[in-house]
Image (cartoon, rainbow, N blue to C red; front, top):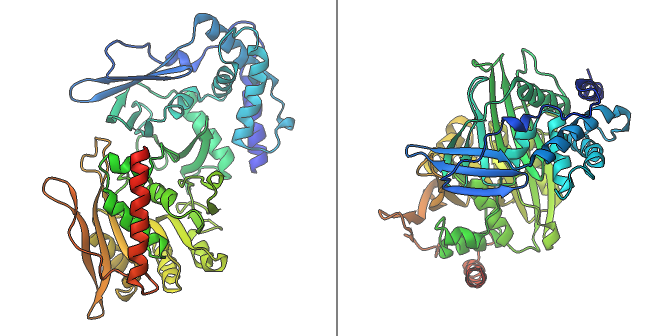
Length: 481
């Protein structure tokens, strides 16, 4: 079945689900818990209230819907109206966004009067997600402090990572309808149906302004019949000044990285999942001279949109690495990068042997930029490239500067830059020269000079000047913030 046919089938199921009625339909948001006293953290994004409670040995996260009885009644009628009024023939283009927007428009027409003083746009959006069975997914998407959440089986509750307190447990147990809705919409807008060969689904969905990477494993691969991982791609963007103030890195180390990138050096950010690699990448990217032409190659668009700030950005989206029949691969676009004349190439992540081969080929051709790579240590990253990805030791000399990001406590939200090294030749073999390292008090200190670290053009003075300019910009930025 093609995408269009599957889309129409989904819409028809929505239309048949409820008959027209003046009575409010049952709402999934009614499953959300009531607010509790004594929250350690509490905030609101209408129509939802978020609370985090400190339970001693863990944090508990809860969501409540702060609608009056009248608003809930109006919402139920609007949901029924949206579900039954939808005409599949009017949905062009056939996208998830357009489905939600169309349902919201139908709901808004019904809410304009009954909702009273309540924000109609927010209620109409909620009605749209109620219509497709994902209102609690909407609630989590509207919380910018939720960076990622997980479900391990069809009988266990959601648990999540929170920007302020770290790992949290919740009482949110997805219903069969919600699980089927996620599968349906990932299936419909992904372009293939899960089966014995492909029992997993992955797609990017934009929900209430949040870009989410949704990964779903079904019974054929998930022992417990259902597993879900939802990651926020456009999580709260920290400036480099904010990262300095939070102690993630120091002003001097930030100036080195910015200056190095501006003279054409290459920088690889290494770390485990959730260690803050992309956060640092975005912060550095925003501070590097906006006049430089940037080329981004990503399967999940996690880099910040800086076009409105006058930056020169060309973004290329490729198929996910996990998709076996991908036609737009990252390795192909990396090899083609040289023909797009970039000053800086930004790679979201190097994952496979093919990615690494193309990356080192581009380095050998003179392409430089900033990229991320999964490993626990810098040495492990080098071993992974050589032993697993077949990269020659000689090619490692093109890497330039390596940065290690760490998350010391996996249940806490804090991330840190813990090490900066430079790859240099010694008797023709690559060696690491330490430049910054965390000491015993966990302070990031400069342990080696960069006197022998010269720009790719060979001029040490050019790098010194670039670092000096970056240092002054950062000092000004820190004072202003």
